[in-house]
Length: 219
Image 1 (cartoon, rainbow, N blue to C red):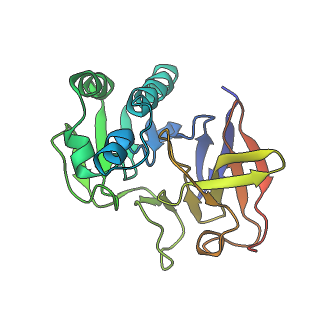
Image 2 (cartoon, rainbow, N blue to C red; image 1 turned 90 degrees about the horizontal axis):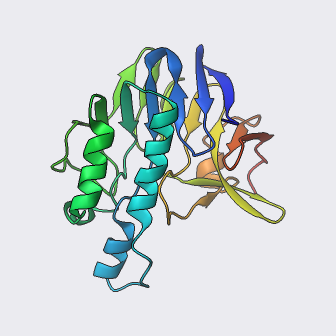
């Protein structure tokens, strides 16, 4: 699958090319910032019209990951919907696709800043979630101890010739890239993001295969 496996607070985790995180010992697949319904939300607010295929493409990618990895639990790290109305506006096809992915699995929805409350979807709706030495939440907190995994910032590595969404990690903190289509990203050297990490942080770049590179110092 062209993934990269690494150690994090004594656990073995795998960064997948799609931007999902796999924790095999817990049979847990983690995704962040799906932003389902983004094109609908932008159209509703009078923005530039986008092709309305983002939800289908995002759920198709997730289905592919779940077909390759039979996770017993899926954890969505917040901003799963572009806003609460976007979640309510999902059409029947999208809802059916989501129900099919949830069937036979434990499904955890963490609250994000775009979706700060539960929607009418199967699963558990939580502010955060802890298992073993790891705590999952939507937005990283500076006072968190080792073992925090979050999303929110949509980190992107700017390289010669373009940029790629990336995981960012040091010994105690891990931030996932956005999993959804049509999502922008924050440069990996932006001070608000880079200063969350130790100097010797690593990035796992998504794409056809995951690449491991050191994160540059903040600009």
